Length: 350
Image 1 (tube, helix red, strand yellow):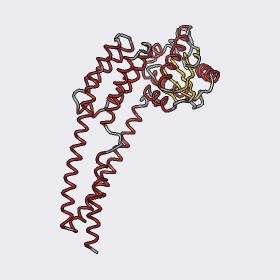
Image 2 (cartoon, helix red, strand yellow; image 1 turned 90 degrees about the vertical axis):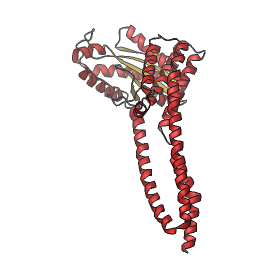
Image 3 (cartoon, rainbow, N blue to C red; image 1 turned 120 degrees about the horizontal axis):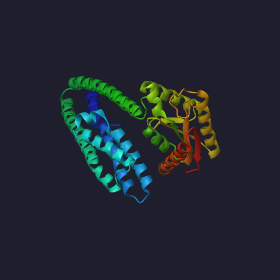
Image 4 (cartoon, helix red, strand yellow; image 1 turned 180 degrees about the vertical axis):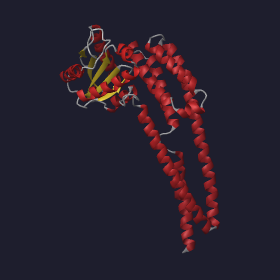
């Protein structure tokens, strides 16, 4: 019985445990740093493709800016800055290209060329991490083969080593679970605005992609004369106002909208919207809500409290229509500002 138990254990170790361990340490399907670098590189290559297509310049630049921002968020990881010398300068390149694209100071071909070096850096990171993973797997495979040879000659040794192995395996599993949880938590934080706790521009893009083919309304909200408010009250009070306004927008929209902060004084709201009249009703509620709140604004040129300029557009969600919807809502917002602010407009469906 002892010999039979030993043989069963040997067969189990050699034919079942070893493949499972190998699959486990390969981390197939897990979210790893290498995959973050891969995703970032793909976004940059998508940016190059967008810039080299025949689509209108405005749409191409908007898509390029969005892809670069997503790539930057995945590239801007502490471990990359710490372990790869190319990370820091290439993040600076992406920052510079973003600024130049937003100001239209860079043509398409030049922008494509500027992205080559960051793509090369990300490729280097991918290959380095693949090499590290391959070395770890090879080292572990060699030690496992040696372990299986020892099992053949000593039942006691295999029993003790088996217990030790499973103890290490369970501890490693717990560590991996914690590491994966920390990674997901980091990803969630990367999609949130640290000041207000609502989503950021990357989160807006991801949420639109997650709602494919749904009828949505996009609302852009700009705080009128926010710079003058900061000059009058100071930046700490300005930050407090931003948090209060994020709460106000959510409550005004009955918590049906997903909220995002796109910049210093610009918010966005994404919500299900079956028709344009419904979207107009939401925009009207925002203007009425901020007026009723009556936040003081001592530096408002029109002697009013804090006011909003609001632009909206309804669209059916997918990768292509979102860029046009964002542009349409932004144009509606610009028309409100041109007309004197403190109002709303909605562009017809994108």
